[in-house]
Length: 125
Image 1: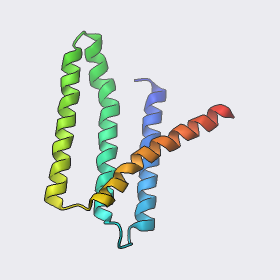
Image 2: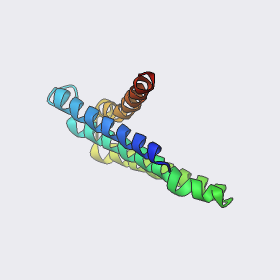
Image 3: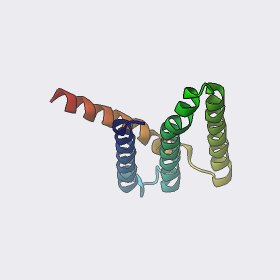
Image 4: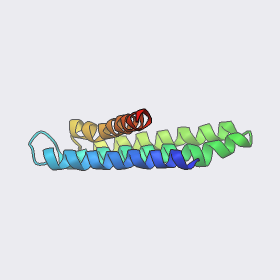
């Protein structure tokens, strides 16, 4: 993976962390959000994004170069199934508030948008 892509991924993770802490500090004490579910949603999505981003670079790209694309796709499918199982377990075992989890989960989408906006402004300058 090239250095620019690594920096972008890490910047997105930084944006997400900042957004998650900001939402937690501003709305964490309100009666509308469950702080635990908010943090679990954000951390879950952050880890998933990190594994997907670096997993493609570390696993899929080398396997594709060797002609073993099916093995790489199988590993990616395994990761998806593993995370869906973990997500199901989180909801049934910890009894998380779905709205708070979704807001924490959505911080990644907003972080990607902010990083894209930052890059557009930087290119336009």
